[in-house]
Amino acid sequence: GAGVSQSPSNKVTEKGKDVELRCDPISGHTALYWYRQSLGQGLEFLIYFQGNSAPDKSGLPSDRFSAERTGGSVSTLTIQRTQQEDSAVYLCASSLTGGVGTDTQYFGPGTRLTVL
Amino acid sequence: DQQVKQNSPSLSVQEGRISILNCDYTNSMFDYFLWYKKYPAEGPTFLISISSIKDKNEDGRFTVFLNKSAKHLSLHIVPSQPGDSAVYFCAASGFGGSNYKLTFGKGTLLTVNP
Image (cartoon, rainbow over all chains, first blue to last red):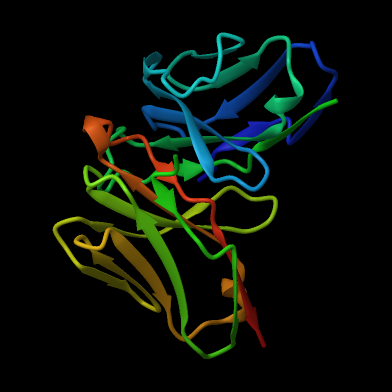
């Protein structure tokens, strides 16, 4: 079946503009995650969805970042008033139930965001 | 402060030999550890995992060893193949009950030379 897909694959924007990044998880996966990878760094957790609810938003770096998930499926990560430090690869993952152990997180290819 | 550390940014080995990738962690609350592999322009893919109740887990050419007292784990790939060339990320979870949240190291670029 289809894996996790993300769009766009690349996004170049000007400082101060808003951007929306989209994630389509694997069908039937109730858990969805957003991570980001800045240059030379590991993946950094941003937010976790269980269904349409986000019980853990602790990784969102500022109030300029928000995310939603609708219909227990597609998720959108929105960054308002982008700054150059927001430049990174934003990765989405989904998993069947949201626990670790046998509940593997499957990652999409990411969206490379460049803020000029 | 990095809770999961991969101190070797890169590793180069000859095809057929063993590759050993290392990972250290600082938080004793982590109780589940994973390795992901990442090719350029692709997302990370799950490779192998180990629970803290074990000290070894094997899957084909891949074996993960866990030394809890040293807070150290390693991934052994034997024999190494050119297709194994990728960035390998160590990840940990289980801290504070947030067992869905993976904490990643910075990755090690493995190059397997033919």
